[in-house]
Length: 108
Image (cartoon, rainbow, N blue to C red):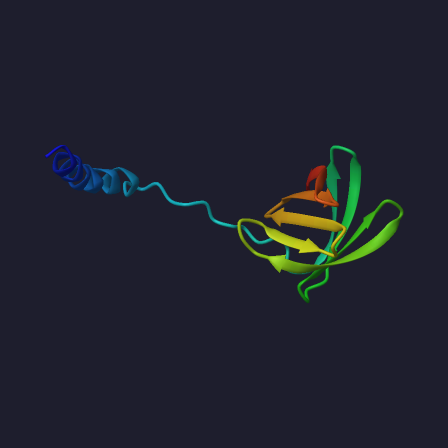
């Protein structure tokens, strides 16, 4: 009997949950980074030069060298990596990871 009441309550409450989440609240939209061009990002640690190469790659100048990273993911943010460096971008903001550890947050 208790189990039946629990299921009945769930059936009655579930539609109300759907109504609450369907009242104009939308899920987050992933904003793509620029498709091509060079940008200077202002980061906590200074400036970072990033070139979007237009072929699903970016080139970042970090730690005194250029690193070419390849697009590996587009959600929840665009992620480019070469195995050591990862650049995650969405719109005008991005985060640089080095060996999986956040190194800097940036925007332009």
